[in-house]
Amino acid sequence: MTKVVAITGASSGIGEATARRLAADGHALMLGARRVERLAALGREIEAAGGTVAFRRLDVTDAEDVRKFVAAADERYGRVDVLVNNAGVMPLSPLAALEAGEWDRMIDVNVRGVLHGIAAALPVMRARGSGHIVNIASVGAHEVSPTAAVYCATKFAVRAISEGLRQESGGVVRVTLVSPGVTESELADGISDPAAREAMRAYRAVALPASAVAGAVAYAVSQPAEVDVNEIVVRPAASAQ
Ligand code: NDP
Image (cartoon, rainbow, N blue to C red):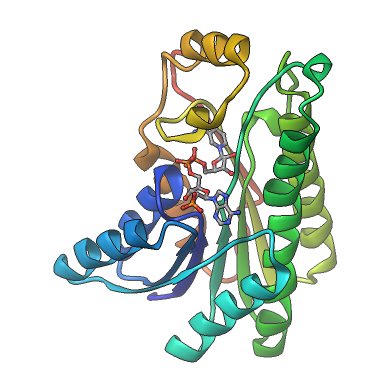
C-alpha cells in the first residue's frame, strides 16, 4: 500500500538512502534537512525515476519548524502515515574533554529532535486513527563505549522514548526502533576531537551500505496494520560490536 512518509535528515546517509528506497517502493515522500540544495538534487533524482516527493528546509531542534514540516506533508498529500525520525549528529569525545557545546548539540538534535517529531506527528496520526513512527537509534542505544557516553545516552533515550510511546499508543500509532551498527554516511565527519576521530577510523572500517538500513525501515513500513515491528538491530555481518 502506498503511504505518505516524512523523513528527517534526508540530505545524506541513511535518510537519503531511505528516501530512495521508499520512493522506489511507491511511497510519497516529504523530505527535511538543513541542506536544502541536497534535498532538491535528491528530489529531482527521485522524480526522474517516477517517484513522488516534496521537500522542506528543516531544523529538528526547532519544535515549531518540525510541526510545520509534518503539517506541510499533511497539506501536500492529505495525510501522514509514517514519520522517520532519522536526523542525528555524533561529535564524539571523551567526557574529560568537556565539550559541553557538543553534548548540548547531541541532546538537541538526537533527543529533542525526536521528541519534536513525535509532538508534531502524534496529534495528526491520532486524529486520523493510525500512523507509524520510526525512530533511528543505534547499537549505541544498547551498549556504551569510550568517547561515546553522551551519544549513547541520547540513543538510550530514543530507545526509552520509543518503548514508552509504543506502550501508550494503544495500537493506534505503531512504533519501530531501528538500531544500525556502523553504516557508510557522513556521521563521523562531525567529530572534532582528534583522538576520537582517529579511533573511529578503525572502528568504522567495516560498514553497512546505508541502503541496508533503508531496507530495514522499508520492511517495518511494509507490514500490515496489525503488525508492529518493535525493533530492528542491523549490523555488518563481520562486526563484533
Ligand atoms: P549523516 O551525517 O550522513 O546524516 C545525518 C542527517 O541528519 C543529515 O541529513 C543532516 O542534514 C541531518 N541533521 C543533522 N542535524 C540536523 C538538524 N538540526 N535538523 C535537521 N536535520 C539535521 O549520518 P547518518 O545517515 O549516519 O545518520 C542518520 C541517523 O543514523 C542518525 O540518527 C545517526 O545517529 C544514526 N546512526 C548512524 C550510524 C552510522 O554508522 N552511520 C550508526 C547508528 C546510528 P543537514 O546537515 O542537511 O541538516
